[in-house]
Image 1 (tube, rainbow over the protein chains, first blue to last red):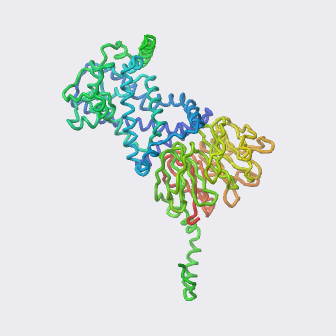
Image 2: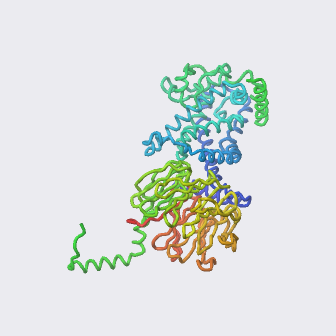
Image 3: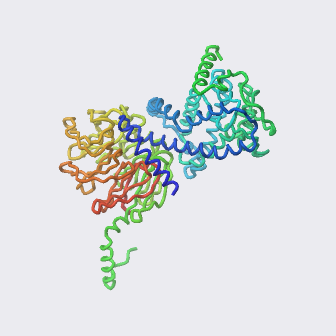
Length: 312
Length: 321
């Protein structure tokens, strides 16, 4: 019933507005991709609503910090809308689609047929939900190391410090990233996807839960998952420690995005359950903390260029 | 073992036969199973032709788009493009027979003589020619741009492939396995059909099908059907051609002799591929509303059945072959 309503609403938008526009622009080639994007955007909107419904009451209930003005938070809202409604992913997709086709053509010519995780573990074919769990674990492992490198290299930190400069960290902060940083993330994930195959996207509920977990980890709430839970899933307490003022740059702890086990294994975990430090990067220019979206993008780019010129 | 014929049972048998004849149309439908490839959620819907319901959903890895029966009819071959594999299913039971690792199979078909299997990869700009028995790769052709659908000449000497990104049709010799000619047909050509020595091509960026003469390589005529002209199929009895338009969301019946429009059905949801039931009904995938439509050209009735996301390829199989 719900699925029917959703399908009907999406079809109305697509057939009534998007497809005729593509036709008028001579872009019918992109119809299937646009249909995918529409689902992404609608789903993104639902995700924002769900995350807000869960996180906002929690932040009101037990906030770590209280602020007189929430200006910087509003900038994070813009980041979230751009990322979750698919505007930035769509632009990136258009820019990279040709590149991707060339790359895949080259891979095909080489005679190499990219494997999938199911090729290595055939039983996963019959258990798609388990397959998704495997993919999440592998991709989360990849994300842990990407995050480590973001803090390790000076030029990459110059971009990533936008994410860390926020002194008013809330659940909106999850998507506060430089556009170029998002592109690097997409390339990183794309490379990993080529090694293990691209995970199927038919588990919206699971994806919704994952997004909720990531947003919750940034929330301004005094919440720990307990001695065992802290080791199973990244909590607001666990991730706030990563965003602590003294944890910026190379001095970081708690890099995991979803599963703290990686920090545990690689010696970067901090499981002190009562520590809720102030967030932010004291070395970052003020614009990265309180500037608008455009300003932060420009300053981030400039800092990256300086870091590269300085050989960092 | 089948029992010997018994005369004493003849009245009962005749009564049964009469009942059977009375419900002939429904019975014909009852004997079919319909396979629908849900390209948007990595699955195959199996439909009961009589009850008009989905009875089973078979998970696949990534993104199935098109399917074709093997020349001996013993297998149904499904291309899962993003998973880089072909699935061979038993069309009677839906059971998996085997898998083959194949580079990005999007559209695929066997030559009429059954010797070659040709696979187009839209995303990778390649057309692969396989020895059908293997399938063993014989030739990989890099083509500009977005090779989409294909049609063979009846003598199996040529395969014609639409190039969605180049606005062209390319003819490839299956003897030399090289392109022989290329002709411009219009923006974003998609479906293509060999019809009495001509090629009828859906020009998706326009409202018409182009009629291309492979001898002169000229577009001789344009048939207006509706915006987003997409794919075209011949009814099994040869009495009509059916064309889909995705933007105007329409199915159009053409006269096979004159290529004039005979009638049209407005079918919301973006009609794409068509398969035919034994009683002449059209089974049409509707890409944007997660449904297939069943159109009865005799009664004009249209019924829709829920399937998975972005249903694309469709195949109607009479049970028992």
